[in-house]
Length: 188
Image (tube, rainbow, N blue to C red; front, side):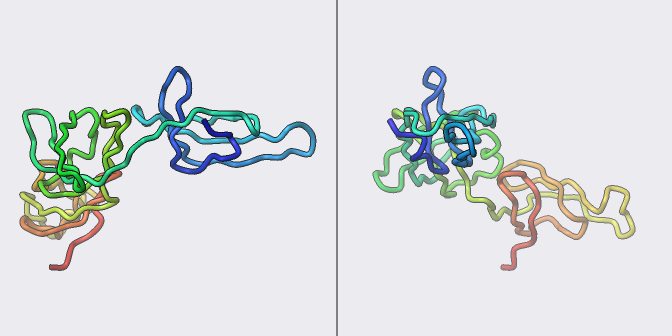
């Protein structure tokens, strides 16, 4: 248990019948009249839904101890993804539903942060950007600007993103893992 006065960004709270919510931002408000309160923005750990919630100052809220571990993606076993804990070398299987869009940017050997709660994986956080090789893209035709200067390209993970016309097959690019956007070439 913690007081609403102790809230910090990233803290995980157990609210509404045991649902897990992460504190995205919070603000202590002390109005001229009336009691102080804490205005928060909370993100549901599993669904990603963001809500605004207000607590009276000093109210007790239940916290959840979420264990964040650095793990390495080893291989895919059927539909599940197998990760290895870099400290204990234990392996865990994570279903695609938990990974979400992160699965589009995973290659063997990539490191990620896996959040565990009571032995079950909650979510996987990849670095903000990853470097991947373009497996295939059509050659860009000079003068073709009808598509806004971008074309589809298949990454080595099999996922398709939009890239500028000058990018060719075999190039290494940087991709934003949160949005799936092209960020730039990687100089080798």
